[in-house]
Each structure stands twice: as C-alpha cells, then as structure tokens.
Length: 131
Image (cartoon, rainbow, N blue to C red; front, top):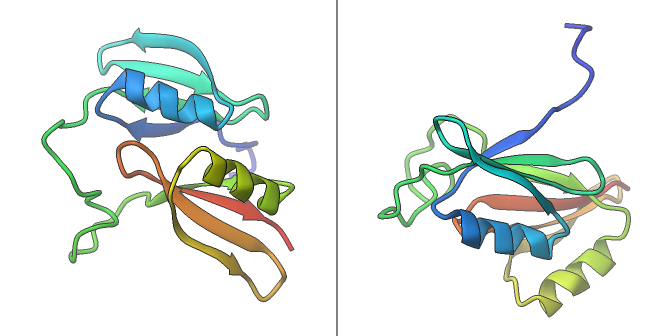
C-alpha cells in the first residue's frame, strides 16, 4: 500500500504502569496520558517521535516472555528496534543505568552494530546503529 507513510505507535503489553513508566523514562520517553480507554492504555513518547502505547492488562502471574523464552516458537512481534546514532554512547548509558545487556554488541557484515536489553516485563528492545 503506497498510502502507508510510517509507524504511528508500538503497543506493548505490560503488568504495571508505574514500573513501565519508570523504565522507559530512563530511555528518554515522556509520559503523555493514561490510563485511558477500555483496555486500558497509557502513552509515552520519545523526543525522536517514537510513540509507545502500554496496554495495561498483562497477567501479573506470568514470568516468561512467551514469544522469546519458551521452547515453542509462537507467531508475533518479538522486539522493538530503536535506531541510534552513537551505539557506544547508548551502551555506556545502559550500563550506567544498571540495565543488563542480554545480547551483543553484535557487528553486522555491513558495519552496523546492535545490542539487546529487556524491559521490566521481559519485552526485548534492540538498539541499532546502521553501518
């Protein structure tokens, strides 16, 4: 479809708004509104324009990320990838914040570099610098 012009937002199911908000504020996201609507949803946005909708109805008794941490491979979105312009600076900040890097840094054949972290609910976030 040629009418698609971009991504409006990413929806992430979370267990608790306060812990999700605190985690993503460390990454520079700003709280906009919420909870609103029947799901309910809360919205945060990064100054770069990346918008996240937290769907606030995750089962608080679950531990594993069903798309990433179990033997069976279920269909679905597995991670959020954020473009960055200085991967080393981002890595240093993540380490200073005490957030565990779960994989990487990985250097790609084209010179791109990426690494992965998990948020408070084990959702995967990739930081990616193009080569």
